[in-house]
Amino acid sequence: MSHASAESYDIAAGRWEPKPGAARFDPGFAPASALAGLEAALSHLPDGRHDRARRLAERFREGLVAAGRDVVTAAGQATLVSFRVRGEPAAATAALHARGVVVRDLPGSDLLRASVGWWNDESDLEELVAALEAARV
Image (cartoon, rainbow, N blue to C red; front, side, top):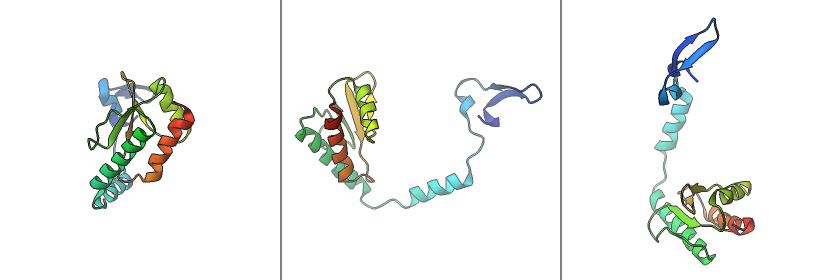
């Protein structure tokens, strides 16, 4: 917590009262080094990144379908690919995470969702499909 998130504090008594609501999470400042890193990351994006992400997402979608998976994301729709797994989605997410694969279960549904970006490569997608089979989800 930072000074900006305090409603009140008493240093002598060692008490601190946070602001109500989300304001209690307000940061005090953004370090210059973090801002420089963010600027560098956003200033040097590769050309063709959106097309690459779409191609990779479609390849991933096709790989899931070829593996017999029920994919609910339509072809050419998005770089967020949603699909069904065998069993409980939250348990499947944990099993995949244990294998080094990060996906998200969509609460209130029977779906997992993978986010495919331009920074991924084909091996990432193959690893996810293989991890689904290895985890038996």
